[in-house]
Image (cartoon, rainbow, N blue to C red; front, side, top):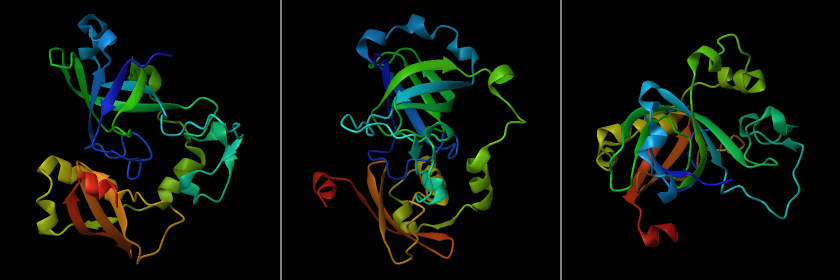
Length: 234
């Protein structure tokens, strides 16, 4: 398969990336096409659609020396219960292909990088390779009576966390990114087997390292600083 584009997002690492697309609608992304696919004709008619499907490569999950496993440990089940790989969206599968539904916010056909699609609700790391883009068709892709299995059952059990960000830390972000950060933290980015209220976590978001703790259903942001080369080495 050919890589047709890469997406630019505020996540330089996978920690904190929402577990599904659309969970944090304020998260922005820019789809930048590879040079050989920077043809405006390929986007003709896309302006009539509100959402698209992205098929992408779990590029950070490749394990060429390991055989595929018929079962995986979904994070939503605490990482200690196995489910069949076909019943999950785990990145560890025979073909490392991801699927996301995102909303188009803008199509700019003439940028220094060629045509660019701006989207929101993305659940991808910065630089993730895009394999294909297809329009979302509400008359056939939407199934209001669909069942969500164990994933839906777990989601119903979870309440969004409260988020406390001191004003001196809020200044590191503009209003749009601050709202997106609140959404990311409210969705609880921690692995579900880690519930230590004394533990401090570090999340890289929008060129800043954000440190936080979680106690009694509340995320408490304790620090933030711009990411530099020395920060990445810590």
